[in-house]
Length: 111
Image (cartoon, rainbow, N blue to C red; front, side, top):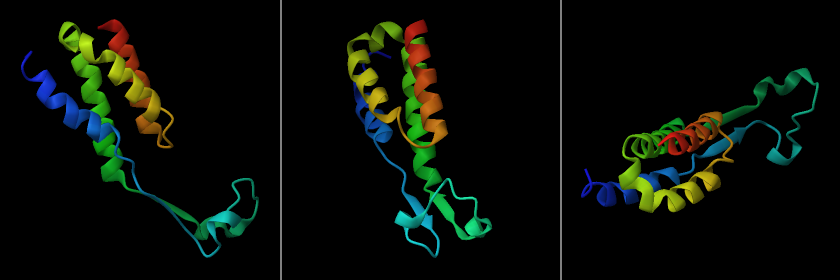
């Protein structure tokens, strides 16, 4: 497994950086969109995520967690870089990305 880790780590880290496209579609402009509004005509507002991009990002984060948990000795030289990347993407808007970042930090700690 040791010779494989350096080969797969770069593509995995690159996949964690991929940001999903979020589009707000409505008849109003995005600047007029108000989350605190009590109006009933908000039904025409739609937010679209690029769920394939989110799934790819979550899978990469999950992969880093599993590698760190199960191959902790081999992943030791890369942990600082992985943690920095997780801090960067951990504030992402989609809840799955945030959840898997927290889970991966836990797996790193247990590893």
